[in-house]
Length: 383
Image (cartoon, rainbow, N blue to C red; front, side, top):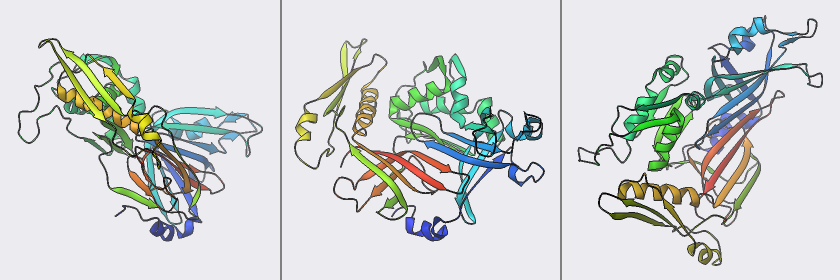
């Protein structure tokens, strides 16, 4: 059963006729301050489960004094200061839901006589990954396992400050395969875990790729887990007037039938190898399979130390390639319940177009005139 019922959302939001958006800066809603007399417009929230940062932006209208030719920086200082915590909520009627949590990363003062309603201040906010990309180190970590190394990094002062400021609500780090499970022996602890002239983000990205994991932030929840671990269907989508537009495509370019990962165990003078075959259905006909099955991808990496390492790397590479097959881009009425890192199933769109897609990106857009739309992007590895 899907976690979200679109028919119920239609009732909950009264036909999506009365969209709303609200932003809190430093814990306060600046539009509620009648002395400021400002308006927030042109919201755009880009959420992702891919290995990149989520971002949000919006504009502050009536932030410029045409008489003096100056922006009202002094009046708005506590709202637009770099580093200020940001929370954005969207929805319809009387029901709004949090869709983004982060901090002010950029402020643009834009004066243009062509802009409707005068000049604006444009705010750009980022999630935790924005800070992680800047923090660069070369050091040996205390942890013996990669999951503990990820926890060690996220326990550092900059990220605990985000927790204390309410930008991060929860950090969830799943055990990686190198850590003993259920009291077993597991693999030999890797005492050489270290950062070498890399950012916190690059290190966690490396760990994610090593074990076929994903690392992302949704709202205030930061997650490091096995890729596509949440297999519960988020929503079942059927043709309806809630859909504004969609594009579904399939492309076998770059798809291979087999992935092989190899390295050399110098100590034992033996080869370490893992092979993974693509078993997915890639076409509604029989022409494409022979083309793809005859292609292979060989990956050689000296950092691989065991057969388990090789298996994990082969799984990651094959999955990454396989999920290039199908692509979905669909724009619907604004639905804050739609989030990345979940599966949606399309039904009733015709053969092949009806499929199961993993949502990688969600874009929420709210215009000043009261138009709220949600665009989802997803990928599929098989038909």
